[in-house]
Length: 162
Image 1 (spheres, rainbow, N blue to C red):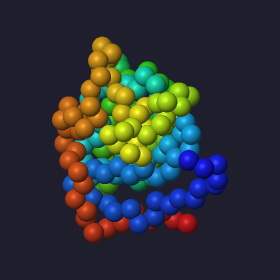
Image 2: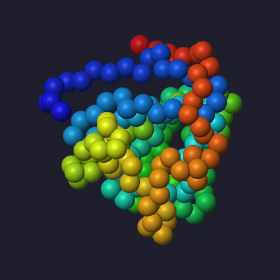
Image 3: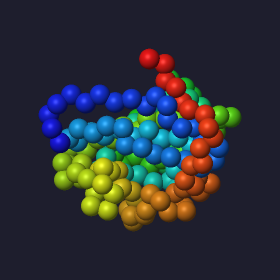
Image 4: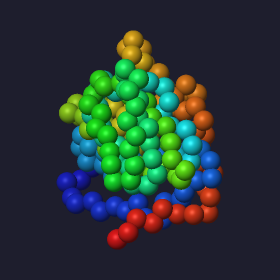
């Protein structure tokens, strides 16, 4: 990774008829951003990331986040949620249009911020996910992605205004 400025864009991201998608948008040492699109579903298994702080920022649609105590927080366009490492959460798309959100992650442990060997471009900290009992589980498990399969493009795009 070079120490140069990196420009990026999320314009023309495909919206979905069903399922979800995730795209790595940009990276820096210890920091990364994904664009996530959900026609339905979400990260439905209550979980935490022990080595990663992250935040979600909604660009379109609506998401309902649930915390460890079952409290719900509904966030819409131009709103977000910060999730400190170790905080338990789940979320689902809850609006009547595609949920389009930015997920920014950060880890001070550069070994965890490095790419996973199994998932190039995806930091290890993003993949470290635990149940409330501390047991690891897969981000792609049916428990976590209930109702959200790989996305089927709808022919429409998300066109962020310049």
